[in-house]
View 1 (cartoon, rainbow, N blue to C red):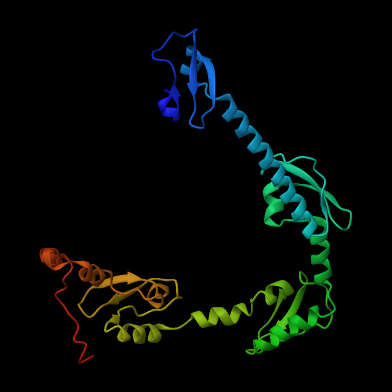
View 2 (cartoon, rainbow, N blue to C red):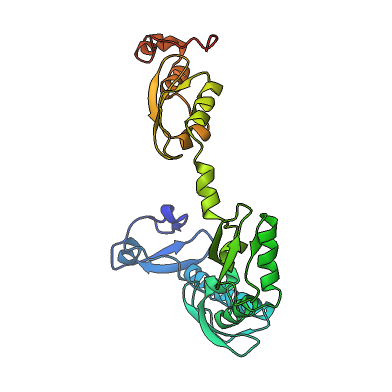
Length: 271
C-alpha cells in the first residue's frame, strides 16, 4: 500500500491493525499510523495540510481574478470570498446596479444586464437608425417607404427593384433579409434549367415538370444509371450515387462493380 502511494513503511513487518507503524511519504515526511488506518487509505497528514493550504491560496487568487475583472468594467466584486466557478457572487457596476453572477460568467466577461438593456434601447432609438435602414435598402436596389424611425423592432414598408412592396422589421433588414417574393421567384428555375444542368454533367433530366428547388426530379447519368433527387442536391455538387460507389471500389474488388454497372449508357457525343 505504501509503495502505491510512492512511500515506504519503515517497519520490517506488518505489526497488526491496532499497532502504530512508522511511515515515510515521497516528500520525506515521517509519522506514526495505526495499521487499520493505513489499510483504510489514510496517508501523510502533512501532505494533506499542504494540499488544503494550496487550495485556499488558489481560492484567494480566484477572488482576486473576479475583483480584477470587475475593475476592468468600472465596477466591483462585493463578495468577501471565492465560492467556486458555479457559485454566485455579488457585483456592482459603475451605475450602481447590483446583481449576482457565477464565477464562470464573470471571468467570461458577462456584465450588468440592466446596463446592457439600456444600451440596446438607446441603439434602437438612435437618430441615424432610419438612415441605416434606408442605406441597406438602397444597397439592394430598393427603398424604405417610411420616413419616421420607431426603433429596430418596428415594421417598415419597403419596395424592391422588381416593384414588390412589403413590411419587415428594421432589425431583419439590417440582418440581411430582403424581398421574399424575389427570393421565391429566383427558386423557380424551370425544367429547361434542370435539363441544361444535367447536360453539364453528361447526363439528362428525365422529368417533364419542375415544381421547385426542393422537389425531387428523375435524372440519368452518362452510364445510364437512373435515380431521383432534388435540384438542391445537384446544385450542392452531388450527382449519380451509383457512379460514386463505382469510383470507390478498388481494383481487387472488381467483381462488386457488376451490381452498379448500367447497360444503357448514354451517347454523350451525339446528344
